[in-house]
Amino acid sequence: MVKVLTVFGTRPEAIKMSPVVRAFEARNGRVQHRICVTAQHREILDQVLDFFSVRPEYDLDLMVRGQTPAQVSARVLERFTPVLETERPDWVLVQGDTTTTMATALAASYQGVKVAHIEAGLRTFDKSQPFPEEINRVLVSSVADMHFAPTALARANLIAEGVDADKVFVTGNPGVDAFYHTLATLNGGPKDDPLHGIPFDRRIILVTAHRRENHGAPLQSICRALLDLVRRYGDLVYIVFPVHPNHAVLDTVYQILGGVPGVRLLPPLDYRTLVHVMRKSDIVLTDSGGIQEEAPALGKPVLVMREVSERPEGMFAGNARLVGTERERIVAEAGRLLDNRRAYAMMARPVELYGDGAASPRIVSALLGEKIEEWLPEFSVAN
Image (cartoon, rainbow, N blue to C red; front, side, top):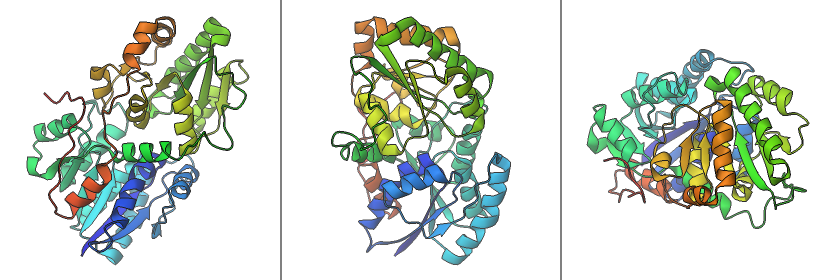
Protein backbone atom coordinates (compact mmCIF):
# COMPACT_ATOMS: atom_id res chain seq x y z
CA MET A 1 0.00 0.00 0.00
CA VAL A 2 1.50 3.31 -1.16
CA LYS A 3 0.75 6.32 1.07
CA VAL A 4 0.26 9.59 -0.83
CA LEU A 5 -0.43 13.01 0.67
CA THR A 6 -1.78 15.45 -1.92
CA VAL A 7 -1.41 19.15 -1.09
CA PHE A 8 -2.85 22.27 -2.70
CA GLY A 9 -4.03 25.68 -1.62
CA THR A 10 -5.32 27.84 -4.48
CA ARG A 11 -8.26 27.69 -6.85
CA PRO A 12 -6.18 26.73 -9.93
CA GLU A 13 -4.44 23.96 -7.99
CA ALA A 14 -7.76 22.63 -6.75
CA ILE A 15 -9.19 22.53 -10.29
CA LYS A 16 -6.20 20.59 -11.60
CA MET A 17 -5.92 18.28 -8.59
CA SER A 18 -9.60 17.32 -8.40
CA PRO A 19 -9.50 14.78 -11.26
CA VAL A 20 -6.31 13.34 -9.74
CA VAL A 21 -8.22 12.85 -6.48
CA ARG A 22 -10.90 10.92 -8.41
CA ALA A 23 -8.21 8.79 -10.05
CA PHE A 24 -6.83 7.91 -6.61
CA GLU A 25 -10.32 6.94 -5.46
CA ALA A 26 -10.55 4.53 -8.39
CA ARG A 27 -7.36 2.81 -7.15
CA ASN A 28 -8.41 2.54 -3.52
CA GLY A 29 -7.00 -0.96 -3.11
CA ARG A 30 -3.48 0.11 -4.08
CA VAL A 31 -3.07 3.48 -2.41
CA GLN A 32 -3.81 5.21 0.87
CA HIS A 33 -4.56 8.76 -0.14
CA ARG A 34 -4.96 11.86 2.06
CA ILE A 35 -5.59 15.49 1.11
CA CYS A 36 -4.26 18.60 2.79
CA VAL A 37 -5.31 22.10 1.72
CA THR A 38 -3.43 25.17 2.85
CA ALA A 39 -6.24 27.58 1.87
CA GLN A 40 -3.78 30.06 0.42
CA HIS A 41 -7.00 31.15 -1.29
CA ARG A 42 -10.05 30.63 0.90
CA GLU A 43 -13.46 31.37 -0.62
CA ILE A 44 -12.51 30.72 -4.23
CA LEU A 45 -10.77 27.50 -3.16
CA ASP A 46 -13.91 26.36 -1.35
CA GLN A 47 -15.98 26.94 -4.50
CA VAL A 48 -13.89 24.38 -6.35
CA LEU A 49 -13.85 21.87 -3.49
CA ASP A 50 -17.65 22.00 -3.38
CA PHE A 51 -18.07 21.67 -7.14
CA PHE A 52 -15.79 18.63 -7.42
CA SER A 53 -16.93 17.16 -4.06
CA VAL A 54 -13.40 17.06 -2.66
CA ARG A 55 -13.15 16.62 1.12
CA PRO A 56 -9.69 17.25 2.58
CA GLU A 57 -8.52 15.51 5.74
CA TYR A 58 -6.42 18.53 6.71
CA ASP A 59 -7.09 22.25 6.30
CA LEU A 60 -4.27 24.59 7.37
CA ASP A 61 -6.54 27.64 6.92
CA LEU A 62 -3.62 30.02 6.56
CA MET A 63 -5.07 32.77 4.37
CA VAL A 64 -4.59 36.29 5.72
CA ARG A 65 -5.68 39.29 3.69
CA GLY A 66 -2.77 41.06 2.04
CA GLN A 67 -0.35 38.21 2.76
CA THR A 68 3.02 38.19 1.02
CA PRO A 69 4.69 35.14 -0.55
CA ALA A 70 7.21 35.12 2.32
CA GLN A 71 4.43 35.04 4.91
CA VAL A 72 2.63 32.23 3.08
CA SER A 73 5.88 30.25 2.87
CA ALA A 74 6.58 30.64 6.58
CA ARG A 75 3.07 29.59 7.63
CA VAL A 76 3.07 26.57 5.28
CA LEU A 77 6.42 25.34 6.62
CA GLU A 78 5.22 25.77 10.20
CA ARG A 79 1.76 24.22 9.83
CA PHE A 80 2.44 21.51 7.25
CA THR A 81 5.35 19.88 9.05
CA PRO A 82 3.14 18.42 11.84
CA VAL A 83 0.88 16.91 9.14
CA LEU A 84 3.89 15.20 7.62
CA GLU A 85 4.94 13.88 11.02
CA THR A 86 1.43 12.48 11.62
CA GLU A 87 0.87 10.94 8.19
CA ARG A 88 4.41 9.81 7.31
CA PRO A 89 3.55 9.47 3.61
CA ASP A 90 5.67 7.77 0.97
CA TRP A 91 4.98 10.64 -1.41
CA VAL A 92 3.86 14.26 -1.22
CA LEU A 93 2.10 15.22 -4.45
CA VAL A 94 2.06 18.90 -5.45
CA GLN A 95 0.93 20.78 -8.52
CA GLY A 96 2.07 23.83 -10.42
CA ASP A 97 3.94 26.87 -9.25
CA THR A 98 2.22 28.48 -6.28
CA THR A 99 3.86 29.42 -3.01
CA THR A 100 1.91 26.54 -1.44
CA THR A 101 3.52 24.16 -3.94
CA MET A 102 7.03 25.41 -3.29
CA ALA A 103 6.75 25.50 0.50
CA THR A 104 5.10 22.07 0.86
CA ALA A 105 7.67 20.50 -1.44
CA LEU A 106 10.44 22.05 0.64
CA ALA A 107 8.85 20.91 3.92
CA ALA A 108 8.52 17.36 2.57
CA SER A 109 12.17 17.35 1.51
CA TYR A 110 13.23 18.52 4.97
CA GLN A 111 11.40 15.47 6.37
CA GLY A 112 12.94 13.07 3.88
CA VAL A 113 9.63 12.48 2.08
CA LYS A 114 9.69 12.01 -1.70
CA VAL A 115 8.02 14.73 -3.80
CA ALA A 116 6.09 14.24 -7.04
CA HIS A 117 5.35 17.36 -9.09
CA ILE A 118 2.43 17.76 -11.49
CA GLU A 119 2.74 20.36 -14.28
CA ALA A 120 6.54 20.14 -14.06
CA GLY A 121 8.92 21.75 -16.52
CA LEU A 122 7.04 24.92 -17.46
CA ARG A 123 9.52 27.78 -17.93
CA THR A 124 9.68 31.39 -19.06
CA PHE A 125 13.40 31.56 -18.13
CA ASP A 126 12.73 34.93 -16.51
CA LYS A 127 12.43 34.77 -12.72
CA SER A 128 10.51 38.06 -12.63
CA GLN A 129 7.76 36.90 -15.04
CA PRO A 130 5.57 35.51 -13.68
CA PHE A 131 6.55 36.39 -10.12
CA PRO A 132 6.91 34.45 -7.89
CA GLU A 133 5.68 31.50 -9.95
CA GLU A 134 8.80 31.05 -12.09
CA ILE A 135 10.98 30.96 -8.97
CA ASN A 136 8.61 28.51 -7.29
CA ARG A 137 8.52 25.97 -10.10
CA VAL A 138 12.30 25.98 -10.56
CA LEU A 139 12.75 25.39 -6.82
CA VAL A 140 10.23 22.54 -6.83
CA SER A 141 12.00 20.87 -9.76
CA SER A 142 15.24 20.95 -7.77
CA VAL A 143 13.75 18.87 -4.91
CA ALA A 144 11.21 16.69 -6.75
CA ASP A 145 11.79 12.95 -7.15
CA MET A 146 9.19 12.43 -9.89
CA HIS A 147 8.12 14.95 -12.52
CA PHE A 148 4.83 14.86 -14.43
CA ALA A 149 5.37 17.09 -17.47
CA PRO A 150 2.26 18.21 -19.36
CA THR A 151 4.01 18.41 -22.75
CA ALA A 152 7.09 17.19 -24.55
CA LEU A 153 8.55 20.70 -24.38
CA ALA A 154 8.18 20.76 -20.60
CA ARG A 155 9.98 17.42 -20.45
CA ALA A 156 12.80 18.79 -22.61
CA ASN A 157 13.16 21.79 -20.28
CA LEU A 158 13.64 19.49 -17.29
CA ILE A 159 16.17 17.27 -19.01
CA ALA A 160 18.13 20.33 -20.17
CA GLU A 161 18.35 21.34 -16.49
CA GLY A 162 19.86 17.98 -15.56
CA VAL A 163 16.78 16.11 -14.34
CA ASP A 164 17.07 12.34 -14.84
CA ALA A 165 14.98 11.48 -17.91
CA ASP A 166 13.76 8.29 -16.22
CA LYS A 167 12.04 10.42 -13.56
CA VAL A 168 10.08 12.53 -16.08
CA PHE A 169 6.73 11.38 -17.50
CA VAL A 170 4.73 13.24 -20.16
CA THR A 171 1.15 12.87 -18.96
CA GLY A 172 -0.73 15.91 -20.22
CA ASN A 173 -2.15 18.36 -17.72
CA PRO A 174 -4.95 17.17 -15.39
CA GLY A 175 -6.41 20.65 -15.72
CA VAL A 176 -7.58 19.53 -19.16
CA ASP A 177 -9.23 16.51 -17.49
CA ALA A 178 -11.11 18.90 -15.21
CA PHE A 179 -12.03 21.11 -18.14
CA TYR A 180 -13.52 18.30 -20.24
CA HIS A 181 -15.37 16.94 -17.20
CA THR A 182 -16.86 20.38 -16.56
CA LEU A 183 -17.88 20.89 -20.19
CA ALA A 184 -19.84 17.66 -20.00
CA THR A 185 -21.86 18.98 -17.03
CA LEU A 186 -23.07 22.22 -18.61
CA ASN A 187 -26.21 21.00 -20.41
CA GLY A 188 -27.21 24.45 -21.62
CA GLY A 189 -25.39 26.51 -19.02
CA PRO A 190 -25.64 27.31 -15.33
CA LYS A 191 -28.87 28.35 -13.65
CA ASP A 192 -27.61 31.85 -12.86
CA ASP A 193 -26.06 32.63 -16.23
CA PRO A 194 -23.89 35.80 -16.00
CA LEU A 195 -24.45 36.30 -19.73
CA HIS A 196 -28.24 36.52 -19.30
CA GLY A 197 -29.54 39.47 -21.25
CA ILE A 198 -26.55 39.83 -23.56
CA PRO A 199 -27.54 39.75 -27.25
CA PHE A 200 -25.47 37.00 -28.84
CA ASP A 201 -25.26 38.76 -32.17
CA ARG A 202 -22.38 40.58 -30.45
CA ARG A 203 -18.80 39.30 -30.32
CA ILE A 204 -18.17 38.27 -26.73
CA ILE A 205 -14.69 39.00 -25.35
CA LEU A 206 -13.82 37.20 -22.11
CA VAL A 207 -11.17 38.98 -20.05
CA THR A 208 -9.24 37.77 -17.00
CA ALA A 209 -6.31 39.64 -15.45
CA HIS A 210 -4.70 39.14 -12.07
CA ARG A 211 -0.93 38.60 -12.39
CA ARG A 212 1.17 40.33 -9.75
CA GLU A 213 3.54 41.76 -12.38
CA ASN A 214 0.54 43.37 -14.11
CA HIS A 215 -0.62 45.29 -11.04
CA GLY A 216 -0.48 49.06 -11.33
CA ALA A 217 0.37 50.69 -14.67
CA PRO A 218 0.12 47.49 -16.80
CA LEU A 219 -3.41 46.75 -15.54
CA GLN A 220 -4.40 50.37 -16.12
CA SER A 221 -3.17 50.03 -19.70
CA ILE A 222 -5.17 46.80 -20.14
CA CYS A 223 -8.35 48.46 -18.88
CA ARG A 224 -7.89 51.47 -21.15
CA ALA A 225 -7.42 49.13 -24.09
CA LEU A 226 -10.76 47.49 -23.26
CA LEU A 227 -12.33 50.94 -23.06
CA ASP A 228 -10.94 51.72 -26.53
CA LEU A 229 -12.39 48.49 -27.92
CA VAL A 230 -15.95 49.10 -26.73
CA ARG A 231 -15.78 52.69 -27.96
CA ARG A 232 -14.47 51.64 -31.38
CA TYR A 233 -16.80 48.68 -31.96
CA GLY A 234 -19.89 49.80 -30.04
CA ASP A 235 -22.72 47.29 -30.22
CA LEU A 236 -20.60 44.80 -32.15
CA VAL A 237 -18.74 43.64 -29.03
CA TYR A 238 -19.46 42.90 -25.40
CA ILE A 239 -16.72 42.46 -22.79
CA VAL A 240 -17.21 40.07 -19.86
CA PHE A 241 -14.63 40.58 -17.12
CA PRO A 242 -14.73 38.47 -13.91
CA VAL A 243 -12.63 40.62 -11.58
CA HIS A 244 -10.12 39.07 -9.18
CA PRO A 245 -10.86 39.99 -5.51
CA ASN A 246 -7.33 41.33 -4.87
CA HIS A 247 -7.80 45.07 -4.29
CA ALA A 248 -4.79 45.84 -6.47
CA VAL A 249 -6.95 44.46 -9.30
CA LEU A 250 -10.45 45.28 -8.11
CA ASP A 251 -9.89 48.99 -7.48
CA THR A 252 -8.16 49.63 -10.79
CA VAL A 253 -10.69 47.75 -12.91
CA TYR A 254 -13.75 49.38 -11.36
CA GLN A 255 -12.20 52.84 -11.46
CA ILE A 256 -11.65 52.66 -15.23
CA LEU A 257 -14.41 50.31 -16.44
CA GLY A 258 -17.15 50.54 -13.82
CA GLY A 259 -20.46 51.50 -15.44
CA VAL A 260 -19.08 51.52 -18.99
CA PRO A 261 -21.69 50.38 -21.56
CA GLY A 262 -20.69 47.16 -23.27
CA VAL A 263 -18.61 45.97 -20.30
CA ARG A 264 -19.95 43.61 -17.66
CA LEU A 265 -17.78 43.40 -14.55
CA LEU A 266 -18.47 40.32 -12.46
CA PRO A 267 -17.26 38.89 -9.17
CA PRO A 268 -15.03 35.81 -9.49
CA LEU A 269 -16.99 33.07 -11.24
CA ASP A 270 -17.20 29.51 -10.02
CA TYR A 271 -15.32 27.20 -12.35
CA ARG A 272 -18.36 25.72 -14.06
CA THR A 273 -19.69 29.17 -14.92
CA LEU A 274 -16.29 30.34 -16.16
CA VAL A 275 -16.12 27.37 -18.53
CA HIS A 276 -19.63 28.21 -19.74
CA VAL A 277 -18.65 31.83 -20.42
CA MET A 278 -15.51 30.70 -22.25
CA ARG A 279 -17.57 28.37 -24.42
CA LYS A 280 -19.87 31.27 -25.38
CA SER A 281 -17.02 33.72 -26.05
CA ASP A 282 -15.46 34.64 -29.38
CA ILE A 283 -12.09 35.88 -28.12
CA VAL A 284 -10.23 35.43 -24.83
CA LEU A 285 -7.93 38.11 -23.39
CA THR A 286 -6.05 36.77 -20.39
CA ASP A 287 -2.88 36.70 -18.31
CA SER A 288 -3.93 33.34 -16.79
CA GLY A 289 -1.99 30.13 -17.32
CA GLY A 290 -4.91 27.71 -17.10
CA ILE A 291 -7.05 29.57 -19.64
CA GLN A 292 -4.17 29.39 -22.12
CA GLU A 293 -4.61 25.61 -21.93
CA GLU A 294 -8.41 25.49 -21.97
CA ALA A 295 -9.39 28.00 -24.66
CA PRO A 296 -7.47 26.31 -27.54
CA ALA A 297 -9.35 23.07 -26.85
CA LEU A 298 -12.54 25.02 -27.62
CA GLY A 299 -11.06 26.78 -30.63
CA LYS A 300 -11.12 30.18 -28.94
CA PRO A 301 -8.33 32.57 -30.00
CA VAL A 302 -6.27 33.62 -26.98
CA LEU A 303 -4.49 36.96 -26.66
CA VAL A 304 -2.05 36.62 -23.77
CA MET A 305 -1.54 39.88 -21.89
CA ARG A 306 1.98 39.08 -20.75
CA GLU A 307 5.47 39.65 -22.13
CA VAL A 308 6.46 35.97 -21.83
CA SER A 309 4.58 32.69 -21.36
CA GLU A 310 5.56 29.31 -19.97
CA ARG A 311 3.05 27.79 -22.42
CA PRO A 312 4.57 28.54 -25.86
CA GLU A 313 2.82 25.59 -27.49
CA GLY A 314 -0.22 27.76 -28.16
CA MET A 315 1.87 30.43 -29.87
CA PHE A 316 3.68 27.91 -32.08
CA ALA A 317 0.41 26.21 -33.01
CA GLY A 318 -1.15 29.57 -33.88
CA ASN A 319 -3.98 29.42 -31.33
CA ALA A 320 -2.53 32.04 -28.98
CA ARG A 321 -0.54 35.24 -29.34
CA LEU A 322 1.51 37.24 -26.86
CA VAL A 323 0.27 40.84 -26.87
CA GLY A 324 1.79 42.22 -23.67
CA THR A 325 0.04 44.96 -21.72
CA GLU A 326 0.61 47.94 -23.99
CA ARG A 327 -2.72 49.61 -24.76
CA GLU A 328 -2.25 50.17 -28.49
CA ARG A 329 -1.03 46.63 -29.15
CA ILE A 330 -3.94 44.99 -27.33
CA VAL A 331 -6.39 47.09 -29.34
CA ALA A 332 -4.61 46.31 -32.60
CA GLU A 333 -4.47 42.54 -32.01
CA ALA A 334 -8.06 42.28 -30.82
CA GLY A 335 -9.13 44.49 -33.72
CA ARG A 336 -7.35 42.21 -36.18
CA LEU A 337 -9.47 39.27 -34.99
CA LEU A 338 -12.65 41.32 -35.02
CA ASP A 339 -12.06 42.80 -38.48
CA ASN A 340 -10.39 39.96 -40.37
CA ARG A 341 -12.37 36.74 -40.68
CA ARG A 342 -9.43 34.83 -42.10
CA ALA A 343 -7.14 35.88 -39.25
CA TYR A 344 -9.83 34.81 -36.78
CA ALA A 345 -10.39 31.45 -38.47
CA MET A 346 -6.67 30.65 -38.41
CA MET A 347 -6.61 31.01 -34.61
CA ALA A 348 -10.01 29.42 -33.98
CA ARG A 349 -9.10 25.79 -34.72
CA PRO A 350 -9.78 23.45 -31.77
CA VAL A 351 -6.57 21.62 -30.85
CA GLU A 352 -5.37 19.56 -27.90
CA LEU A 353 -2.08 21.17 -26.92
CA TYR A 354 -1.87 20.43 -23.20
CA GLY A 355 -3.69 17.16 -22.63
CA ASP A 356 -6.27 14.66 -23.84
CA GLY A 357 -8.38 14.37 -20.70
CA ALA A 358 -6.60 11.27 -19.37
CA ALA A 359 -3.64 12.77 -17.50
CA SER A 360 -4.91 11.88 -14.02
CA PRO A 361 -4.94 8.07 -14.35
CA ARG A 362 -1.50 8.25 -15.97
CA ILE A 363 -0.18 10.22 -13.00
CA VAL A 364 -1.61 7.81 -10.44
CA SER A 365 -0.33 4.76 -12.33
CA ALA A 366 3.18 6.20 -12.60
CA LEU A 367 3.18 7.07 -8.90
CA LEU A 368 2.26 3.48 -8.12
CA GLY A 369 5.23 2.25 -10.13
CA GLU A 370 3.21 0.97 -13.06
CA LYS A 371 4.33 1.36 -16.65
CA ILE A 372 2.30 3.97 -18.50
CA GLU A 373 1.82 4.98 -22.11
CA GLU A 374 2.88 8.62 -22.17
CA TRP A 375 0.77 11.23 -23.91
CA LEU A 376 1.74 12.16 -27.47
CA PRO A 377 0.43 15.67 -28.05
CA GLU A 378 -1.32 16.65 -31.25
CA PHE A 379 1.24 19.44 -31.68
CA SER A 380 4.74 19.47 -30.18
CA VAL A 381 7.53 22.05 -30.25
CA ALA A 382 10.00 19.99 -28.20
CA ASN A 383 12.26 19.53 -31.20
